[in-house]
Image (cartoon, rainbow, N blue to C red; front, side, top):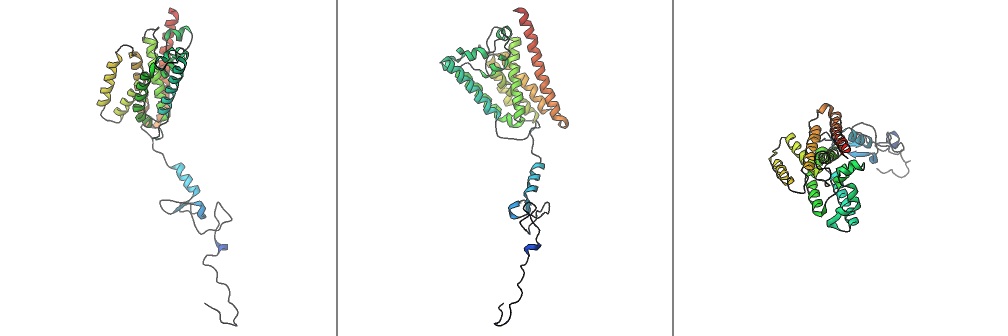
Length: 298
C-alpha cells in the first residue's frame, strides 16, 4: 500500500512475531526463538535442536535419551558388541612371541632353541626346582615352529570370532585364560615332570568347549561341534601332542562358559564372578598339591 503525496507516513507495521516477545533459547540466552523441544517443551534455537522420530528435540534431551536407552545384552549378560578386540589381540601376541623366539634362535623352524622359549616353556621340574610359576601361563603363548603356530591361531580365529561377541570381551578373555591355565594345570599334575610343553592348544580346546556349551544353551544342533571335538580327541593321542593339555583346557572352558551362560538372570554378575574365581582357585589348588609332591621328590 502506497501513501499519497502530502500525507504523513503511517506507523510501521509490526512483524508477525515480534523479536522482543519471543522466549530465548535455554542454552543461548541471547537468541530469541519460536521453536521448542517436543520432549521437554523448552525453547531452543535451531542450533540446539536435533531431528527425532517425531519433531525435533534439544541436545539435552537427545543426550538423556541415549543414556536411558537400554543397550541389548548377550546371553552371558555382557553389552552387545560385534566388533572383535580380544581375539585379534591374542593372535597378535602369539605371533609377536613367536617372532621374538625365532629371531633369538636365528631359525624360524627351530625357535624352541631361543633363550625366551627356554625360560617360558612349561617344564614342571623347572617350575618347582627354580621357582618359576609363570611358565604355567607363558607356555600358552609359545609354539614349536610356524606350522604349530598357524594351526592354533587359525583355530582360535575361527572359533573365537563367534564366541567373543556372544560372551562379551571381558568374559571371553576370562574363559580363555582359565582354559589356558586349566591346560597347563593338567600337564603339570598328570604329565611327566621332565617333559616340555608349549602352545595355545589348551586355550583353543577351551574355546571348543565354550562353543559346545553355547550351542547347547541356545538349543541348536551340537552334532557338528561334537564331531570336530571327537576328531581332535583322536588326533590328541598322536605322539608329540599333549592330551592332558587339551583335555584340561576343554574341561576348564566348559566349566567357565557354563557358569557364565547358566547364571540366573536376577544376580547374573555376582554368580558369574564367584564361579570363575572358584574355578581359578580349584586349578591353583591342584597346582599347589602337585608342587608339594614334586618338591618332596626333588
